[in-house]
Amino acid sequence: MDVESLLRDALDLKRIPGEPGFGFEQWVMRSLPDRPRRRSRLVPAFAGLAAVLAIAVVAAPWYLGGLSKGGPAGVSASPSASSATAVATPTPTPAILTHARSWGLEFDYPAAWRLNDAPPIVVPTALQGFSPAAQSNYYVRRVFGYAGTATPETVCSDPVHQKSGAWSLGVCSSVWSLAPGDVVLRFQKGEASGMAMMSGSLSRPPSVTTTTVGGLPAWFSRSSGSVIDPQSSVFRDTETATGADETMVWQLPGNGTNLPSTPTLFRIVAALRGPNVQALEAEVQAVVASMKYDPAVIPLPSDPAARTTQSLQALTRALGYPFADSRTLDCFPRVPGSRDTTVTFTPSERTLSKPLPVTCSAATDPNSMEGWTVTLTVTWQAASDRHAGLWTAQVYLDQQGGSFIPGDSAEFPYELPLAPQLG
Amino acid sequence: MENKRDLVTAARDGDRDAFAQLVGLESRDAYRLALSILRNPHDAEDAAQEAFVRAWRELPALRDADRWLPWFRRVTVNSALELNWRRGNGHATIALGELEPKPLPDETGHVATRDQVQRLVGCLSQEDRALLVLRFGLDLELPDVAAALRIPLGTAKSRLHRALARLRTQLEATDGR
Image (cartoon, rainbow over all chains, first blue to last red; front, top):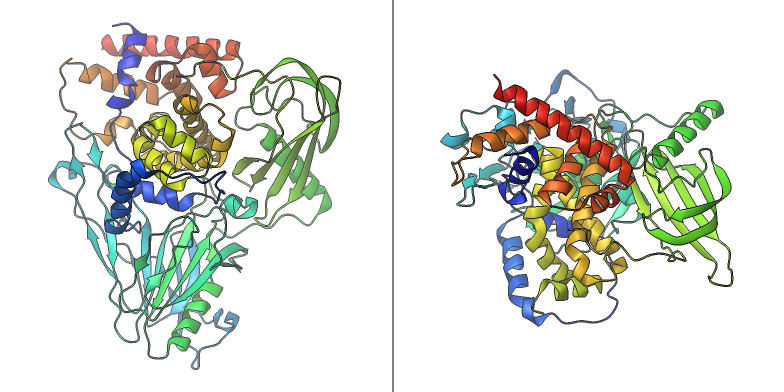
């Protein structure tokens, strides 16, 4: 076989092994931003399928446990009381605190609590010959670990080798059962990135307020009873912490300022059971108030020269999105400002039937993630065969990553239709 | 609604339930497409999830609902490449072969060669992998591959030529062992 035929065989999507993890669809639906209906429309023919999905949501809690190396999470031997004063409502009796450095976070917690990684999983025989890293590919990892007076059990299903040759991934769930006086914090993978929070692409539900954790913005909500707030205006699934009188949820965007890869997003769920819920909540709030990212957030420089350098680097990075040789962002100046030019392509890759005189502008502003927001604008004047118009986009950058969010844009004049076939 | 076109139209109009059906229909292919580029299951999930979020956000701009599939594939590829871009092109990858502990023999008897080709493709850059996946995995014409990757046609041609030459050389070297 020639190399092209071999590639067609090897890269056929049907032959690529693997499936998205159980609960993936629910995770996607949780992540959708709000978007108003353009017009009312009923979809009765798909009510059955919707019902199936709804059943899956109920039957498969999205809070999936993880495969871990096992053993206790990183705990320092030296007690610390440094952050106890950071609590808005101090505990009646200041607790002796222990310092933890786990999962990309540092925090102080009462010495009487336990800190545990999500438990290791006993994998089925077919996977036992593989490295822990390869084994972990067969499970969806959401939960990093727990801190508190109790640790919920984790129940996992096995991955299944299906007739298609693909594997369905194993799923692990927390089994909450709080006794009187229990308090549990669960640390897990979150959904709300800093860019999503800043840009508004992930809308903040009414139950959620904004706060600051570890020097970066975060979301917070508190609920009475045992139902954990999903913190989503889209996703309607709920998880119950059986026995809890109160639950709290934080979404942390992750520290992108000093990490080698995309920052981990965190979701922290606290579940409390009285008596004395207020004191327990104060303990939890103290833990969160002591929280720092590990490594710590690097603030933007205060030195004007260093700031200017970073601003230029941010613009260069934004215009490199996602390829350095892309022609679509060529019209923008390489330093903040404006430039008059003529374009034959739009920034969103559409070809124009004839050249369009435009002004391309680029601006950089510091953002709340200790990074930069780059605003790109294209404007054009009215002429006999066109109206005046404006195209905008924002690139949200922390020091390691970014996200490109096109704004509300008018259609460019002279835009040609998309190529008739892409696949 | 009886077909995907109706689902796309409804989702474009803001029908979340219709979009949930699209997610259910497309999630496996979206995941595998992202996986073929990123070679890491967790990254592939992240990229596929982001592709759906982006599709939901940008669906109102899709004028022709019949073009959903190529449009969404393009969104998925771009999400995968954007993830790579965010991570500074240096994120660790896992050989695709590791994902399948016991490859099952198939009717063509090509398992060994397929694994070998998949591993060699895994050694290419993610941009070149994306190019090969679009060209041979999705069978797109080269101008469409270039458009999907936002690169000039000439760049796509030269990258493809280099990637194929490298694969040929490596396959010959492997066969000669």
